[in-house]
Image 1 (cartoon, rainbow, N blue to C red):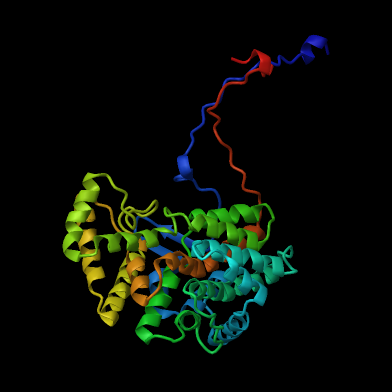
Image 2 (cartoon, rainbow, N blue to C red):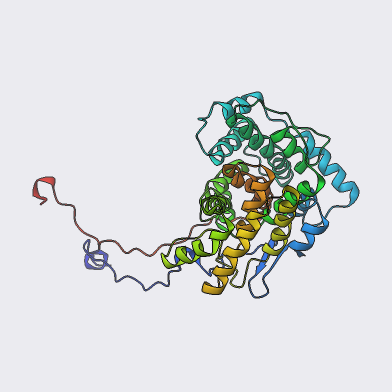
Length: 391
């Protein structure tokens, strides 16, 4: 071969290939999954084949968590064993508790829970063991301990003492116990439990995809969960339920809601709690959550939030044909339960950790690193000039 054949022009820049980029990966199918399916055509959502509204009405959250992890609903014996294990894991270490307590009081609760989960990973000597059995055990630990962390932060931010978990209560009942020192009436517990089921999983959403990307590098389940929490914190994802309630408090009076929405639309103001990347005809979870938000209004007598809800929805649908998403009824429901607005998204984390864990285990079982390409639109290749020659 001649010298000429080996010659490479250092200044040669190939013509860029035309790439069909999809901003935000919209419409892209990047993998398979058996965890859940969103069908925008029929406005339906299934977990492992079961319609979510059926699960919400007929199951407790613990049953759905088992379904996420094991692909089947549990028998009575399996559920009893699963609950016994979950309840045994609810305590968190004094060190973890002290870390949460030492955080700045003004930091967002999502930052607190992100830190708590990260610390939990530091405490687990099996951190690099990603075998199916060990990851299943870690998933139950996350399910059990995250509510304790959230409740601890809830108490500390109010200047109150930590209330240890009660292992004789269901997950939902225990969370109320740890936050308020008492368990509310059964209608409130059911409404909360339903919200956890509806928030448990939703296909390849931003936080789930983030968790799968981290898992694909063969990192650990705690790191993947922390990454999911970071993604969920954003107001365009999990934080939307907080923004909904801030909006409702700003409006304050149901009689002003219609005009507020008309003005917001006229001024092109972003209105949280409406629209969805996948659903075009309305979020399939909304009717169930709307029902239980109304239950909360009936129980508490705070009907103004649901009257405001109806007025805002009516204007948005009539003017824009855009429908509410799950965050819209969940926000006022949590507020009527007595939770501070900043804690709505950490409650979301309590639920979604089940979906994340299911996806993390699914990714690990048949892994390939997730490494997409990007279309470069920067400057063409150029030479570096000495600093003395730059103008």
